[in-house]
Amino acid sequence: MKTKKANLWALFWAILALLYFFVPLYGTLDFSLRMQRGKLSLMAYKLVLSDPQFLASFRYSATMGLITIIVSVLIFLPTIYWMYLKVPQARPVVEIITILPFIIPVIVFTFGLIRTFSGPPFQLTVTPFRTDILITIGYVIISMPYMYRAIDVGMRSIDVRGLTEAAQSLGSNWLQILFRVIFPNLRFAILSGALICFATVIGELILGDFLVRPALGPYMVQVGRDSAYQPAAMAMLSWGLTWICLGIIQLFGRGNISRQITGR
Amino acid sequence: MAYLDLIDINKSFSETPVVHDFNLNARQGEFISFLGPSGCGKTTTLRMIAGFELPTSGKINLDNKDLTYTPPNKRNVGMVFQSYALFPNMSVADNIGYGMMVSGKSKAEIKQRVSEMLSLIHMEEFGKRYPSRLSGGQQQRVALARALAIRPHVLLLDEPLSALDAKIRVELRQEIRRIQQQLGITTIYVTHDQEEALSISDRIVVMNEGKIEQIGTSTEIYNFPQTEFVAKFVGQINLLPVVVVNPTEGVVKIGQQVIKAGQFGHLNGNPIRLAVRPEELNHGFIEGANNLYGKVDGISYLGSIVRIRLDIEGHPVSMDVFNERKLAIPSVGDQYQITFPMDACWLI
Image 1 (tube, rainbow over the protein chains, first blue to last red):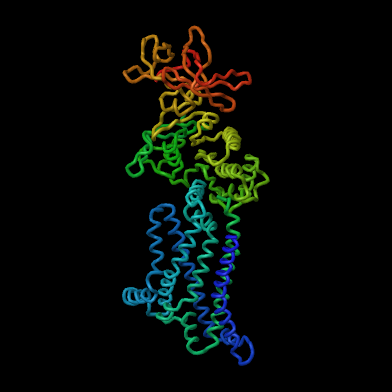
Image 2 (cartoon, rainbow over the protein chains, first blue to last red; image 1 turned 90 degrees about the horizontal axis):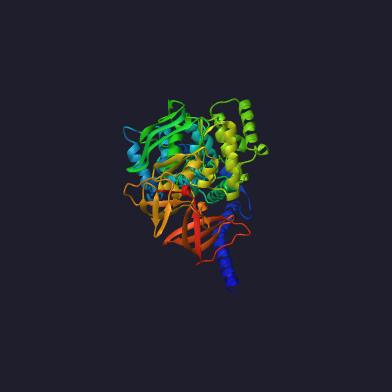
């Protein structure tokens, strides 16, 4: 009797949560389809996708997202690997450092970046290319909590020390160990981190706005100021993109578990 | 002629010494076990041979070449880990061929060696499987084949059977010994299981608190332990405090009962104890042998043997007898007489 009552409450809260998430989403979808008076149409989507500025800003943000992923993996993978192997006691300190982007507001961090690196000797804002370097540094730091945690979880799921020593005793050097043994066993963890990293960069507003780069975030805000239906269409498109990313993580993540569960 | 030579090896972590004055000469093709309780330094010593730890002082020579500071990937020393440490992303064949692949061997050579190794471990049909689809025993066989595929100078095994169940352990240890003898490879085997060490080793190094207590064959270690630790750690032992009556003839007293000990060791004023293994004791009285009287304190069935616990002059004594169907088992509280030959006991 008690269990039945508990089940009903669980169902009630589940339905409430679904309504909380899906009613606004449905509202946005419905609104994005009502650009033409009196009928449902994909006009807002057509306008968004045919706008050359949208494509340019999406291309820019996607490129920066990919660069951010590559730089993040190259920095965090060897660092976390080294930490696990040589200084595991440093983990609590590193964990605190990696959550700093959640604590420091992005606007404060962006001002700090501009003040520190725009003047000599760095002068990272004098050309678009240099500004792109600065914005990449910013994106890497903003997405650090996600990338760090994804790799950290992956490292915890494998016997890092055992695999390293086994590979060493078989004659591997450090690069061979990293790229033939450790990296392939972390590819799903890295993929998860990469997709979240990509989504973060795609939606990021403040860095792109203050460094005056043609990123998707500032473009979306601009469109939101000027028109009514296109922002709703863009919100739905970005929502769809996020779900595709999550789907890919789920798809590969499942394969990962079944392969690693008894492999250690 | 020593093949693997460990000379005055010392190792400390921070200020804590873990291995002291370790000296060992291993001959080519010899199977040596490091036996001792947890924390005695056996794995640390093995890791120093592998190159994963550097000795604080001392030297490691392999075939007359100084190996002390050679990095692990340049030593050509195969290692098998307790946790198997198979690469989860590679198939069995790829795991076995990995060492050859990183050393730049040709595909044909790798394929041939992998096939040889699979046949050596009797797993010819498992080449394409992934480690997650193998049992623990099979994974450890693959780990052994992987370590052997690089044709190492020395094979190191760090408690390779600890994670397996008892039956598989017995089978696999015989398998390891068979392969080691077939290949004639110098092997160092770390274990805390005395039965394992006694059954497969040419020589055993018994370690305690970072020091070597005794090096010897299984017979020497079991039948002629040189220290109290070895006597207690390897097998069961009865240690009875005695009073020396006649040092020249080896006559001692346990309470009011007089017996004669074969080997007279340390009579330099230290407390003397009589050591005798439970299986050396028999029920009854034999004229001219050592005979003791006591009271039965308890009985334990251990399968093929029955352990009878006695109280002799206030001291506990265990006696092991084969569990035969017609065995007359005494009851707790019975008076009991035991006998053992003079040369079955010694003083420590």
